[in-house]
Length: 179
Image 1 (cartoon, rainbow, N blue to C red):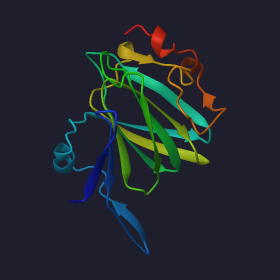
Image 2 (cartoon, rainbow, N blue to C red):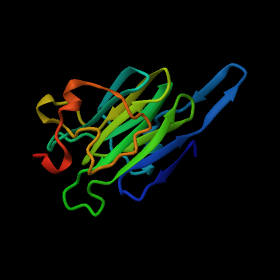
Image 3 (cartoon, rainbow, N blue to C red):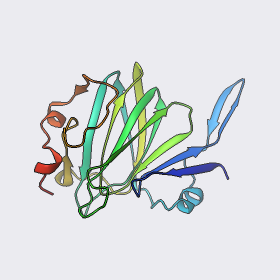
């Protein structure tokens, strides 16, 4: 099988590791194959997104509310990021818990953050290009967020003074969130 998966304590989050085929020309990664990813329990994806960011940029924590919730399959295609999923499912035994993973160009890793989670990442390299597939199309009316440095979440961001969009800096804390 050209990919393996790793589950976490927080149910629903999944790290997928695709094989990386390297030689003197570079490398090749089969980044998505529906039949394999379906075996891991992932839903269908309907939209692809791309972002380019500079070192220290933190994007997030973003999510969409029902009925337009989005699962995201995130991969760094250039550079290195630290990617985070936060459980915001009401009634979940891991509500308010987070998981972070490092994703880097050529490592073959993709992080699946399902609907019901907030998502964000910070750039660790000079620049980073990030591609992610989503399970629902973007809907600006359903977009919400949680402030990246919510003390109740206590996320151990590897960048202490990130560059954050004004909108992201003004998001509420999880405990103040109206979903």
